[in-house]
Image (cartoon, rainbow, N blue to C red; front, side, top):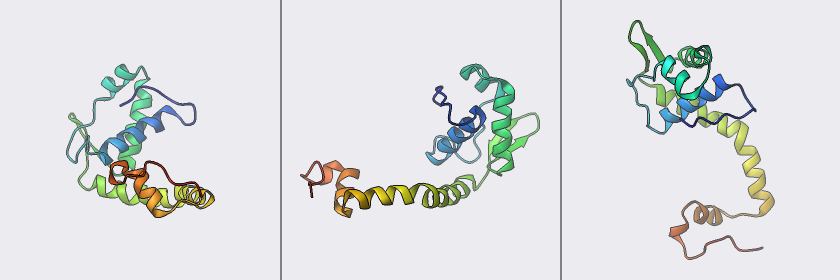
Length: 129
């Protein structure tokens, strides 16, 4: 996890989002333990209660489970649950703005394909229209 914090949202929420990203990216897999609260607090110089609040949010979302005396573990099905939620959030919150920008700039599906995979085409940038 990246130790840099931004001021746009609380640190506990940023911690939660980083764990979510690690699950979606496959860094943390179902059944894997989360780093201990104390370890995360020491590594990132944050209050253990902040880490605990972040982890509790993950428990509340049914992404992780507490195992008494053992720690917290990623639940089975957590990645699929996250994908559904994150996809829906992207489509409702981010996509409308992205789509508007694409329309405003007159980008074509081919422009986007080339930008996503520059090695797939000889053209390195979208043409000026």
